[in-house]
Image (cartoon, rainbow over all chains, first blue to last red; front, side):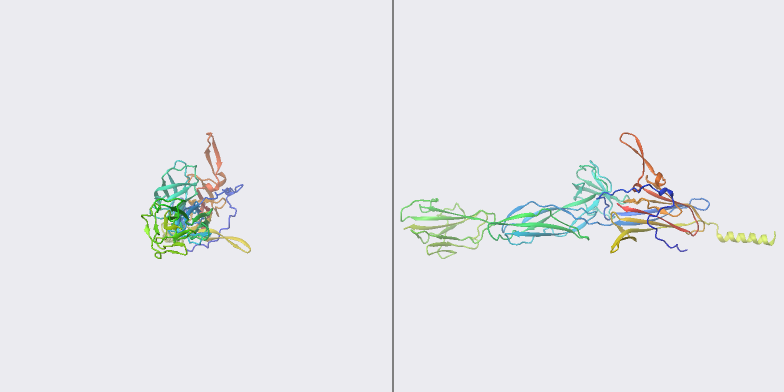
Length: 382
Length: 164
């Protein structure tokens, strides 16, 4: 016997049964964020009990139909890391972000970051932890009340100790507050999962249907670039996280993170000794014929190396350079006697037209942050 | 006994044998599950229902329960009961079915009543008991009672829910 043709039920037509004539349709306003976790299986089971013509009860028959709840992607919440200052050429700035899901299920979020330079060369931020990042999400299947040590979320129709991407050790946000997951216990027959939390719920009852999002962290590494003029510039960083699920909602950090890049600074001081290099001072007094020993100290007050440091000193009138008196040192306390001798014409040291030049290059010419390079030479008062 | 009477009684016996000792009804039931989708076009929006296995929070689902008596005897007092699926809420005025008396429960099937009469009691903080009319979104079960389903007959009942 074939089944009769199925006609489409007309939409919401009035029923013969008087029972359903209600004065007004009671519309229950759904909470703006009320939702059901993705991967939840909703089952409808209909059972028919009937009797035969004689009124004898017959065995019941039933039928079931299921739907699986789909993921509704959400724009994550991204933190805005505080400003930083780094040295040009030094270690990259490391920015730590928190990313919090607002979706009803697990999703992957691709990360991009743009550094806008000002008075510094362009750089490309990188993601040491890689991209995309997976972040879990679910919903409350029952209200969470103050004092509860666990929350109830829907079963995600999968085995294991992770529910919708959330596992032991995950940080989840319930009612705006973070909790650490201590246990995940699935109850397939009840279609629920219990998530144990490290500290009890506080801050008021959170209604069933509210999103429970996972919170994770990731880092962005930003190189300094090179300052183009003056002593500093900035890299203004904006990082964006984009859901991999159409329509791919995206979030960019609310406040850009400004990284100040400082160029290393050298200061120079010049001291003179009238006693052949034993003691040095800013000024002195000596009779003609005295061989003055000059001490020029280049100090790198920055936190990063200064390269290709070079000295140029034009001797004033009434002074005659003394050959063989050049020396250098790499510590401010080194005495003239203990400093390393320099030979004219060798290793970047020379004297011509009454101008002493020292440009050692290489390692000697690179002064580390906080370091010094000292040049000594003698000149006789005419 | 006259030949005619004898033939009648023989015919009756043959009839009885042919029908078999167990005439009985046999109800089969199936569910058609669809979801409301809205399509926008130049002329405006149109909604239709399409079969689905996946739905998003907020979607409207419609369940059509088709019952057929494939037996050779009428079924009587057929009661179709369908708990509102967990994870959804019943949409008011959406339950229907020709020839069926429809009642609802909001106590998980312990008691049923027609919609206008479905009430429950609430104890107020003052200790007083207040009787309230159940709102459709609180219904937990729906029941259709069909007094008689003739052999070979088929019918359908339906209702809609919204995914939480």
